[in-house]
Image (cartoon, rainbow, N blue to C red; front, side, top):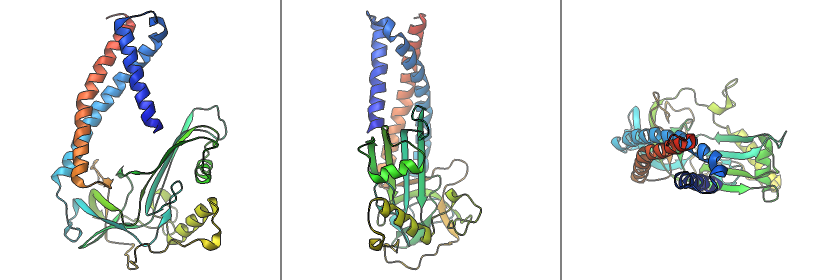
Length: 319
């Protein structure tokens, strides 16, 4: 919500600067700096939107041109599958406290805990257990690293000191962010039973394993082992005041004990900037959404850039 408000305020400020700069008025001296600021940022934003529109168009065509495959018939290479998220055990997400196989929690606008006067800080935390997409023909293991997420928020709040929950406070402290100022926190998750659409590359398993197995490797490249998931659950529930004796372990959430945690192939990000999307939308709805956004960006970006160039020229006095 805070990001949407900030974006709307920027748009209103840009429009006001344009009106004042073109129509004149007694407050021109006061808005001169704003005119230049919104002009320069508008040019940059317009160029960015233009190229983002073509990137969205490219990804939309990739997804649209690839038919949905049954998992048992999926061939090596680009595939598009639709199924239910399942897995052998779960995590507890740090903000929404939901059982999940994957979460991504983000905080920004919080300031450094060492110095509340420094510029804004941002942190992202991502963890995942082994999880699969299953349809009526089989299941595929997902390696979510590098995926573009099209998931609804499980948690999205602007919080400040007194309004923070203990979980949010603990999350910020764990990442060295202050708990006294205003902070925006968001969280995405893939939960047991979620209907998941995945577009990616079916490829050989390149060593995806648990943190305990990948000794000396970057933990960001491995999933959380069952023991680590149980420990994470204990710590999370302890943070919200649930006694340890009442904690349930991260046991199988769906009654499937026969998961192959070392499959020969996994669905993952491809090479050469090939798109990899994890979504909770139906494929056609995602394609339609990407088409709308690409049209807006491709046409709106140059318009924004041209109007912003006019603002800068007006500020320079050449127009």
